[in-house]
Length: 482
Image (tube, rainbow, N blue to C red; front, side):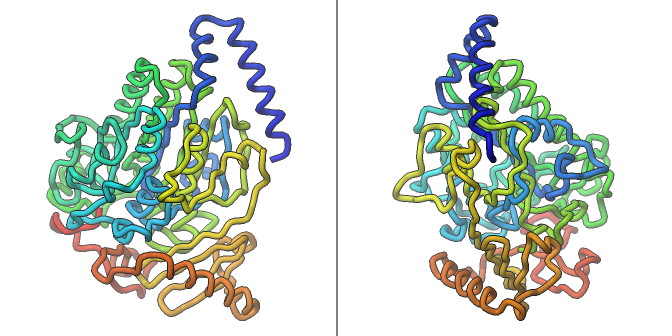
């Protein structure tokens, strides 16, 4: 990170000179720079660590996601708070371990769940709104399906998207076969491929926010590349699986999965172009990440494991941030970070801070990103009820438990998690295991009746020998994970 301050200083001075010599639009850009930055937070759904071109994927082009990395910082040690979506989203919006809330014990929220985030709990959009931001969610919510637990009741000024865990890309129905597309609290009908609709709405929102003349926080949460496996040419597949819970284990291919990602990347490009055309790109923080590791057709190399597993492939995610006004461009950072870090980091950038009654479990990364502080080792903790999983990372060491099997890995030297060091380094193993137990004692206990998703050998061939608990059958709609 050496030289960050010099790079940033040159960029700011260069922008000031250009602003003095350019048009009135450039003058407005410089005036805007004195205020807090805009924030566009883009979250993909079930995207694997290596499912992005700039993370080394040789057979998949993502030029617009890569553009964010070229303009900013790409993390190689970015983690999700959970191996499934709604639990990670709980950590994102609260800045705290999800296990502090009953909502976060669902792995993930299903169609049967009727709760949500408590009304008195501060949220990232709510705290930004208090700081003067306009706040909008476009896309996936998945933190409570009933209106009283919706995004408008949890800090967002406007919402356009879906409340559940996924929707069909064409019918916009959820896993319970009910329509799940909303404008605020009003159910709507739109014709079109979901990824395209979300991109269009995000671009429109940016224009509206710019005209309003106040800083904005736009959460753009795609359902891509989450199942069902449908590209813009696969409306026939949408009709084939209509009436099911959308989990077509007989559907999809690697090529289809790549196309789903490519369509999302195109819409991200439209968003970046909108920031450029409105003259606000320099003063806008753009984050791109995923809610957990990849699923069936994903590439998690160089890690093993996937969604629902506390192996690195289920937790390590692509994570990129750009802010041309303050952060260096084209940098790769080895700083370990986790989803809940975004709340204190983005609040600090906005000149705000977490509610002292609900202190964040995350870290404000801004001093590290700007080069004002050095990178630092971190400790992270996870648990997952399916297969009795537990994990802790301390420095390069990782404690892992799956059912009755325990492990110690050096994930820097052994990212595939193959060499179990627990008998060679018994003191390290004992220390990490004890630390995990001490941390776990401070969290809510697991609930035996909460949902926890996993995959069996009957569903995925590479899970041979694995038995329940499992998602409900795909033949009918209804009580299924979202």
